[in-house]
Image 1 (spheres, rainbow, N blue to C red):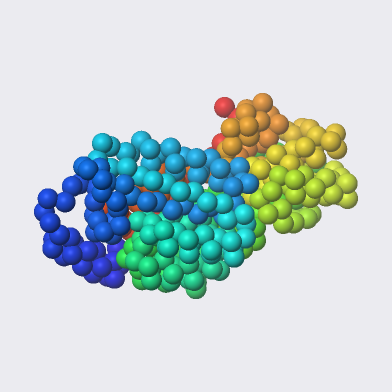
Image 2: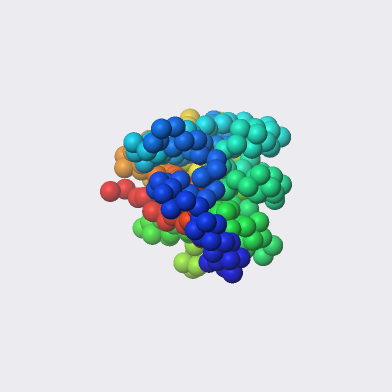
Length: 343
Ligand code: BGC
């Protein structure tokens, strides 16, 4: 914990100490004014803003946020969770944050549409005295790392996520561990198509970079045949892969997709082109959606990487509850990725 956090949490504790010692468990500093008490029960209002509902992975994530909050309810503590759809539109999401503030949310969980708007969002939410848990889309610090000032300098702001470098590395390692190391045509190099997520998102940047780095680190020569942006979207993944296969045909040995949704699209294109995963092409995704794990096991996908929606959503909720209870928090919380290959 940095000094500011320590100081701020000490202040919170001092403020808490000033509160009545009969305050029931679960009603902390931030929320002791915000949470609504009725009889013995206290209800906390939780605002959750998702970048867009139309996203397979974030759908799992948000459903689990809701379900997990329910499991934490007791006779005396309730969570009124409101989840809103940013529709991939930053202006829309900004209005939703304003509305959360007007409604007096006790804590906000925010999956930004654009990480470039992190400062504006943090400023608004901090200005309203509401604690904030950022999820899934990490605003990077000036050095492109985990040193984002808005997170380091505010005691009640943190980021919960998974380190996308790890997922990219795992994708590359899965290929490097194949008997032919991804070189299906034996020409001494791995020729690949990269299908990227939203380029503003570090998950897309890191997966693109680290999947190839892992191959190079394993001493494998690589050749980028094509690299296109599919914005995490299944239909776009399909279009990109279909076009690349039509243009470059057998030259493409490996299709790396930054997520499983795009890999599902790529698979449809591979299938339509009469190619066979595992025989004349390899296909990689990230997320480990149920249907993709099934595909890995039946050989129609080469591998994927578990992006732990359950671990991340539970961590985000646990941290939100800590904030509601006025407890000190860390700046960053990380949940590991897991390699998924055929059982
Ligand atoms: C997931 C993608 C998802 C994106 C949304 C990534 O971590 O792997 O499937 O579309 O987050 O920001």
